[in-house]
Amino acid sequence: MTTQKIITPFEKIATISNGLSADLHKIIGQVEKLTDIGIALSSEKDTAQLLEKILLGAKSITNSDGGTLYRVDGNTIKIEIIRSDSLGISLGGEGNAINIPSIPLYGENGEPNLKNVVCYSYHNNKTINIDDAYDAVHFDFTGTKAFDKKNNYRSKSFLSIPLTNHQGEIIGILQLINATDPETQEIIKFDSVSQRFAEALASQAATVLTKQQLITDLENMFESLVKLIATAVDEKSPYTGGHCRRVPELTLMLTEAAHDTDHGYLQDFRLTEADRYELTIASWLHDCGKIITPEYVIDKATKLETIFDRIHLLETRFEVLKRDREIAFLKQQLAELQNNTTSSSALEHTYQADIAHLDDDLAFIRLCNTGGEAMSGEDISRLQSLQKLTWSLNNVDVPLLTDEEVYNLSIFRGTLTSEERNVINNHINVTISMLEAIKFPKHLQNVVEYAGGHHERMDGKGYPKGLSREEMSIPARAMAIADVFEALTAKDRPYKKGKKLSEALFILKKLKEDKHIDPDLYDAFIKQKIYKKYAEKFLDDVQIDID
Image (cartoon, rainbow, N blue to C red):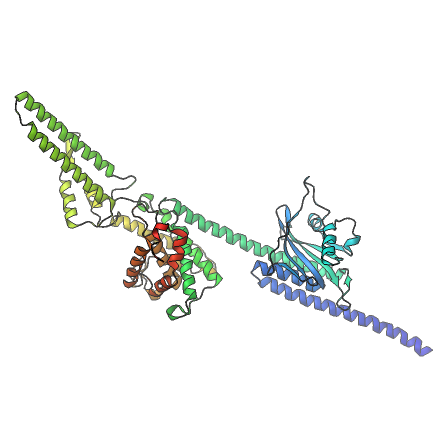
């Protein structure tokens, strides 16, 4: 009898001890899970996977059958991810797309929506723990009950936790459904310990999501500024308005072709998503230095153009010469009439020949001004002869063509003088200087090299640094080809028509043979028909004359 009385208390102590040990073991397990989840969340960069890890981690820590992660979107709360183990539901995140409408946070009268438990948790910034949804009187679970009936399910315990960022703003709600006893698999309520662990995870999740959103916002702002600069460059000229938008796409097309090459020089070249992003940024900024290039140089459509096309000044001078000839002719006719002489027919013939000669000279100057054909030595001599002609200005004879006008009209090919060409070429030096002044993060360290190399040549005769092929990265070489091909086929330039594909590819081949562009990238460009992909997106049908 005495022994029994002594043993019984010890048995009770042992039972209590075993219970405490089990509870302690459970708590330690939850702490370990919370730690592991926190580490996983801090290293995750993909938002979809991040959302999934948050929800799956919360389910694991609380042993829940299901859950939903919501994010605040204006005056609504949007379902981002849903999971249910027993129903096999996996929507959002890495699962199937969600087509469920967002939940309004406010009613039509503007009052807070407090009947929905998620909205209530948002408006009151507090965790809501419900033992049994069917017994809840303050919330409307009509939709939940309908879902249960349709899917032969029983939604019982609910835990809704706000996700609050560092500014005290609620950015989402973590909702867990049906806590489950790990031994009996019965649905139980969320105990206080599980709630605290879930709240701790929600706090970590809010921090990570906020960090991710801040990174995304900064990247979006940075990209917007990059495109703003490119747009400013493009908008300076109606004739090059698409260049800074087309070159990035073509550059990426070509580097993807290099990435897909499984033999030869390019077989080891591979692009990561970070590489693609860096190259895209560099491509958008490759002509940022043109922001300081005068518009009249960028848009120079004729040799005499500065702020305006000075051909009109020459046309006026020729008109003055013709009027002077006409006045002289009429004076001679009048004198003959007064002297009763009869040489008017010869005078008329001389006058008409003189006018025809002036018209021919003006037509020649107009042709020279276009810059469409290379100037011959004969053409230069004719311009110099025309310079000897004079016209009267305030009773002073002045040359028909000034030295500067003859210099411009004598440009061998194109419309730019060597000085203007230097101004154009200087944009790449300005580009490099501008980009070197930006403190790019580590994952954008190659932007300057990529953007600054698109006028270099494989033989080292390009500019501004005279780099050879071996001194340039593959992406920089790809951008050089993209820049050339876009310029050849562009249909919005004032000084030339956009070339057909056959013409552009013929020139590109010559550039390869002359060591202007990378031969292996050229081969990938041709073999994988990158030109065709680009043409289908950006060229007119009339330009696409080959497959």
